[in-house]
Length: 207
Image (cartoon, rainbow, N blue to C red):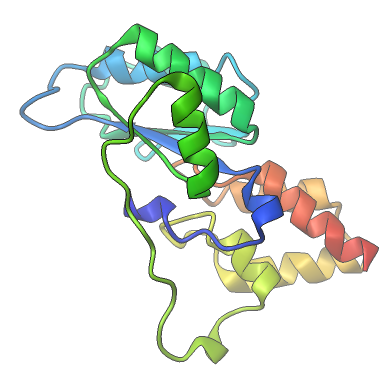
């Protein structure tokens, strides 16, 4: 999905960032809330960094059990974020075995995603590319701020807030962990990776 395509960063820190979503095809998977919940339940067996749904919120707003036991058949999409490619590959194997008949989309470095697919015995169905940012790019926030802000594909983690918290971390006013969690609370769908954000903020302190 396009809101997971615009993450920026280095090969090293993007190698710990794999947002996943499950979505129903209206008219084909109607009444399949349980299938989506099953995908999230399977993902939760691994140390996922975040999860959520657009209607109710993410990890920092709503407990996992509330989503897994919801009876709201109108939930459009469920999200989760992996930080380890081996966990992701095993999760893909779990999905193949479960054979739920519902769409699951994984985003990340192509080389790593394709490696996970091979380990799971899965052939990718479709691949989407982001072409980057065009226009007056000099007006964008700093590179470090963009690495964090672009983890929320709906722009609910504004660059200005990221820059403010980056300054607070440098000055010792807030820890990288607390700053990352505060930023994660703004992303309602649950694809923001607080683990990666914390590591990016930690590097600011070491400079």
